[in-house]
Image (cartoon, rainbow, N blue to C red):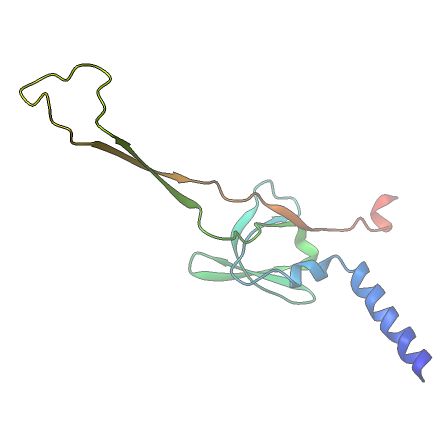
Length: 143
């Protein structure tokens, strides 16, 4: 009994490992994807909704589009980004007031420190797309 259960679990694991569509079903809902259809030069770009055994549903603006698995050549997914793409930086510099050059102007003996501050924002690029699924070449098409 244990041996049969072990063999069945190994067979199920091997079948899942051989199924390239399993990675498509593992994509997180809302992730940005590109779907390349057979015979099309431009991909369909949208948000991943769900995948079934025989189709993938992509959210395009305000409508969902179902694409049959047989029509899909390739699916790319943009990985989730950890944290924010925007980073801020700020630098404050304080001059202690020690004269490097003789002071100019009417308040030559003022000993007030001078402070200057600069700040900025930088926007990092989004991560690139990664190929999740490529339609396997069937034995009949290689003849």
